Image (cartoon, rainbow, N blue to C red; front, side, top):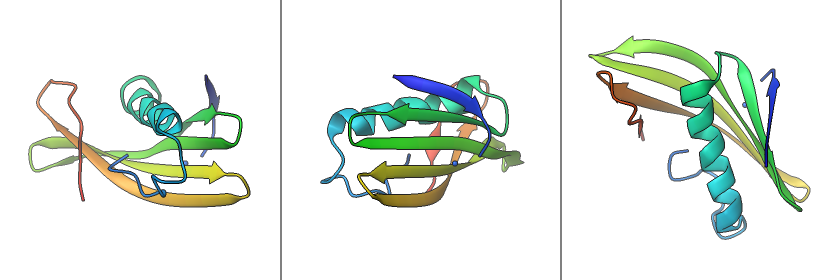
Length: 102
């Protein structure tokens, strides 16, 4: 289930993959791509499961060396612990294929 709201926050994820289920990683990844392709700058995509939740927010779009890039803020809560990270994704041309920079 994705809940979309306005406000602020997938590389091979910064959160501990062993502590977040594959289903929850999939929810986060869906939120990342939804934020990149369908949301306005600054809007936030939230996802929830029974123990884990997360947010994704695109904070910036900019051109870079013939590509179109976005800065994303991510947060994942697993129980009482949270992990926050920032990442950059870029795409070239008119395609919809995003590549996450390391």
